[in-house]
Length: 631
Image 1 (cartoon, rainbow, N blue to C red):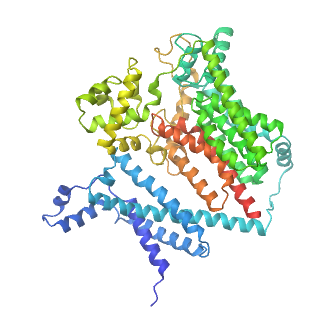
Image 2 (cartoon, rainbow, N blue to C red):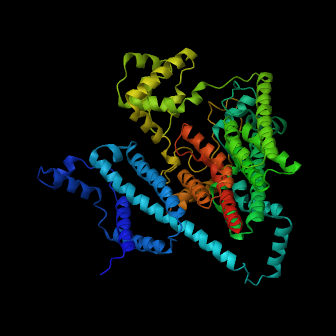
Image 3 (cartoon, helix red, strand yellow):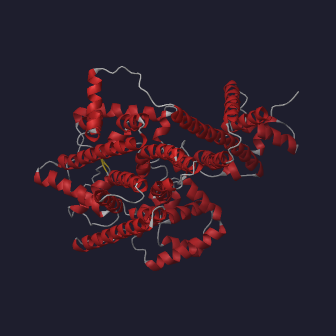
């Protein structure tokens, strides 16, 4: 009897994957194993500990999952083109990457450390089993994805798309309007879908950082560069119109928020029009529309006064015109160059670290075009950087704006130092030097593994440059003494950006209130949501968090999911050898790196630019694969 090799591999792969799904969420100790058996045999204890790790794997549910997985793996294996030598490499790469995210994420979400991986030799053995299971899972999933794309491309080459629907005269008229004025048509559609939020949440929600920016603009508190100058001018300008010209504080918030809504509707509509021009794919166009029109957090995000919304829209505009730049081989029209340069200016001005996005993206865009266009894009980017830097410096001096605290750049080292303090004893020298920056006893009381905000808030303003230099000397020495503390601290405060099961840590999935505490509202602005709509606001918020807790759809709220999609898009483009078109992903990866360096884990607000841009990037991916195939 001949044994089918593929069947055996699929059964083994399914078995390992089920084990990965059902592993224990706490390390199994020697004592727990001895409670089950009354013997000191090391081998017997090892076997019992193995069983305790996977004691849920024997159930009927896991048996069903095992059968379905084995069948799925076998079905995918049959469809795989054995002559395609590139496919196994790319899919294995995807499996290895995402398995790391799952194994580490599972440990940190349950333990706030990596004890589920490294606590003992036995635990490392268990994590290896789990890792293998996840590698199999994601390898087969990537294989399924790429073979599906290839099959779809073959079908499109064989037959043209035909419509079998009998459209009514009214529907035909609607389609004519959409075709003639697509941007205006979809803007109106977005606004109709978002109108209940605009009415119920009047004048719009607000983050407390925005209130601080307004207070700085009107001169109530000292103006610093902690927040970008440009959005501070916008927020303060609108509040000046509402509060001081129209004598209505709420109007100041509403004018800004409705401007964000209109700009957002316009940019999304413009992006949809462009992606449809490239792909001629109605499913992608309507998918983008449904995501932004009906996914409940987007209306609230656009209707919230916070700098991240303007920045996210700037990134979307920058990425869309980067697509145009690539399609045109750098030969943009004058109008397109002007808008492209404006998008760069907005990226720089709406986020203090926006300049890094431009500078790190520049080499990739320079490489993919001819010499004349290289000079254009280099000159444009560098002129934007010089202009924006000059503008901010001039405006700072003219308005006596001072630099923000250095503590904002210390998120990672302070979190690492805090973890070290919680796990190890400090020497007298270390304690003296660190105490000049932060209160050590306060760290011990308030330390939280997923954010450095509590530590950063206690940073001493009296700390000098010499104190900082001394701190970094000690910081380096401490790293070489116990590097594991630093690594755990970094992973613990960032894994939510790579592990979809980690729910958002701070501010929730969106902002549903006006955060104006008295200590921030020193100008006593009367900004408030309407009492008459409170019951409807609560209903919307509860409904949104109910969706957040539902299977599958809840993942759409997760920061980690969008990182996964970004990596999947990268691997797909790499497989189809569309390296040139991968340049538009660079800004999104830079934003992801900024999130990793940020003080908060799994913070939706920081991931908004990636979340807003990725639907259009998926459309771009579909276009570039099809274009490459036709060539």
